[in-house]
Image (cartoon, rainbow, N blue to C red; front, side, top):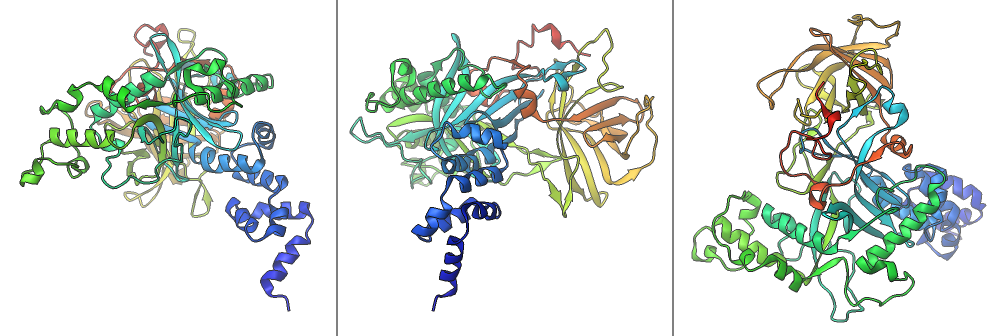
Length: 575
């Protein structure tokens, strides 16, 4: 007699392919893979283009027409689904850094068979900026998808001669990642120049090896600068600034650009005269720096400077001392000895060194929607956006943009442009009021000089207790759906410790809000943003990137716009 499992498998085999395709919408990619392993008959039914097309749709990061468009450049929908699940979905969203204080916002979005990181530049905008899509932005990085679903990483930047691309490796992306790190990856190569060990990266650090993040900040900075100066490739159009499609006419250009990127990733600076189909044309990896070249660039001082330096040695660093040191003599090692030992251990862990990107999950604490960030790490931090709390949709959560002034979208003749503010709205449970509050955290400010610290709350309102108060200024016959009382940012104890004063948030629609300070009657009007749609309008301007390491994470504390010619740009006069 046929057992239950065999009967179930046979029943699946009797289903028409279109019916199973509908059923597959209720399965995950891992469920599909498990069914494929159940036998050849099931594999023939399940492992089909139709099934994997449905799975690509269910990832919900691309509309159907773009999924079909991307399929032309990849071997199968299965390979495409893998890229969408493992790369695109974990990375898309808003990533930030503390410095510069005006705002360091990197929006990660789908490109063309790629995922791209675009920095939104602090700027002034006209009254119709959202509708027109006139946004200043700058490229930060991109991860391209190969024909087989493999990945390649490029950091954007520039040197004295112009814009550059810096190829590297993707060293792992966790599905719930919230920390994006730029690092140098040591790698081992086999003796044969034709057999480069490109295995997926080291999944865990080998015993006795010091990871990149454990090096002193100045050492990490030196290594990043040396490797990027070695692997950088100068670029011109269409490689510069064309990261995503902006019109139907762009598809041919994007296909051409993608082919160029593949060549650059494989052949480095000699890519123009190379053919992708031919292997074994190089006896070295252009994305990596040989250990001998690394030592030559570092110089002897890097190893033998044992004087104490003004660097921070974290508790983690002080407890990982490798090799012989004064600790073997029952005395605590000095910070310079720790640094020296970590240097040697890191360099001995590979014979080539390349640029790498790693996306991982870390338990991060936050305050009023802003994460506490590790000092001296070349990292970006993802801002979480919760969609549901107790099965109730958080209707106002997400990214909003706005300007000061009322009515919304109106600028005085003397000031045709206003400073753009980007706010991330999040919900939190308030212990003080024992109810939910809505927090509007400032992540970008468009003035020439910053007035409030990056990551501070522009307002906090009690979202569970609507009020019936009238709009305090001329409403211009606008109807308001709701209002909520709370507090808005105000002058306090210096720059770092702003105060707060009473105010109210007024809801015009679910996509249009206004917060009014009760005492001054100042109004900031906010509109919900879809940055992907705005950037794909193609009407914005692409600002040249900074030098590579600064372009990924700007480490120096600054209170002006470091991403443009802020000191000479007349458009950055204070309001």
